Length: 400
Image 1 (tube, rainbow, N blue to C red):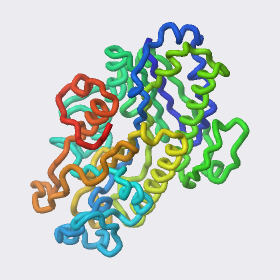
Image 2 (image 1 turned 180 degrees about the horizontal axis):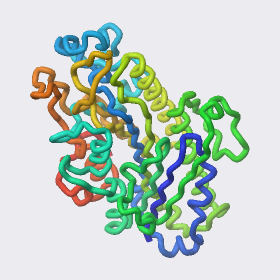
Image 3 (image 1 turned 90 degrees about the vertical axis):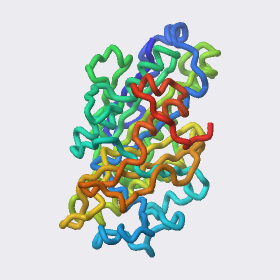
């Protein structure tokens, strides 16, 4: 039996709406007889952060020591004295200050130069490439996580659950053919609440748990809060199940069963063709404050060492600013990984502004599917080559 549940919900959706149904969809005795026994590694959580619209990598991770950066961006470059210096050549946007405790503790990795060969600069097509882990000339319908869950479940008894928050699109969890039977369980929850109802609202009696972490008052912050409440509620139900207070599962399964979970969150607004400086500042503030709160909640839940957080985006931005104080679509960008088992620091290939191609674009230094191979082979220990349909070398980003 394949154990996958896909949840598509708005940022305002309550964890309490789906967890009882997810755990109660089948008779407990049936689950105990037919569910496979999983390795403890399979309980590791992946949280994907989609920076939708194409994040500007050069103003996020800044090559301040390269004079070409300031020549290409006379109006929108981040001044050196305002940036957060990481080493003698590289700095962060000042809005990313909330992430510096993670950087200093060695639990934040930045992978530079991420992209793919023959890049497509259409939002829709490039996002499709990232979601399906395809080549630029290859059209696949099923998301890479969907393939991973199917392949691993069939081959190794790998249980998995998928959650999508903040977007109506399934992205890397898409089933392609729309065959609901293959999904195991599919649920869509839409609460339809406004952001004003989320900020500072009192906790209700039916809330899954009372986390002490304070979440930012933003739609992205609300998405993170929903995700953390879901994790808390699920852990609480598992404890109750083991104690015989809720579901009566086989004792051996209760000790060893821990489905891998992939949560996809979306932060919108990165298509900064105009007036980028202020817009980008606000977006990166939401991003950094949200991830800092996420880290706090995961530590509170005891899940920090079992969680890998990874950003992705359809593409980066052009190295040269445009005439509207913004940037147009570009090729590569840096991406972030964080977690208790992450090997922090700068990885990948820094931007080589002296080696722009004929279109003035940066060359690709790291294929994005190497990030996926790191998740699959190193984090979840499944067959990355079979899932990605090609051999990609995992990156040295984790200590397991």
